[in-house]
Length: 345
Picture 1 (spheres, helix red, strand yellow):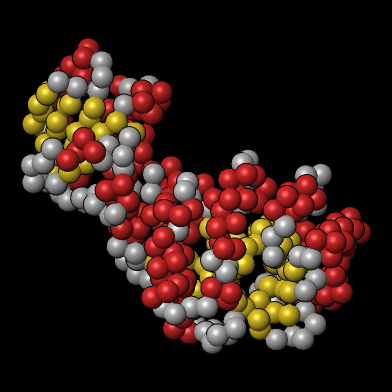
Picture 2 (tube, one colour; picture 1 turned 180 degrees about the horizontal axis):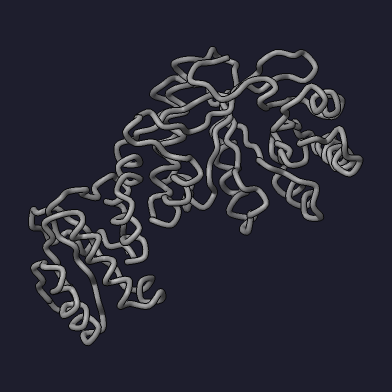
């Protein structure tokens, strides 16, 4: 299956167009055709392709709703389809998506528009040296740039992941952060930029646009720190190691985010040896009141010192928490020092 055209932002969010369903089972295709007639759409069955001409987005949503009612979850994953504008073309055979993903796109056009038209911006949260008490970098976080199309970042990324648009959103988020940093930060300030390993199948191809942005905006690669989100969900350590290796070949630093003190922590750090480790904010929250949390933080400090890793406490929200972690970490970040804002603190 090829879906590259979708990732280039070619999903037509139009009130009139065609929904095409690739249904291998002729009996199911005929059943769908018979049921969809009630929606009032024009339907043509062309071999394994069911072509549905819709005249409004509401009509399209009703169609996909009926398809979901008729097909099983497994069939929604197996069967594929395309969404096209009114212009006739045979290219739909090259841009099919599983119907499970296509249905999400049809049900959430505002999310698709946000991703395709890049209706977001990067906010920056300061990262402070715990000893020198100075800003050494910023984490870049995605935020809306249109009041008409607001979003919660976690919801947007979750949608993108399930709708097959994760690669596009993840890449554009990195590029946006690089551009923003180039415009607002001086050389030597670190850019902490999140990325999802699952969105990078082939580092050389998937990260081409990222490093083109680094070159275009004349950013020193050594100022970049790409951090893995959801570290606890690392399933393919070799894949992540390959991504880290590629980043480092380009002169970029790497980090693991949300690291706890679980039984696998040492092995993961030993195999990957990131440049930075960010302690899970749940460990930092009220750590000054918990011997267990302080013990875990000291454990992470010992591992980091052994492996030469810079340790960052994320989620510091009070003077008490800062006082507790200060002797054991190199960097700190959290609302106590500053919230994410549009311009550098």
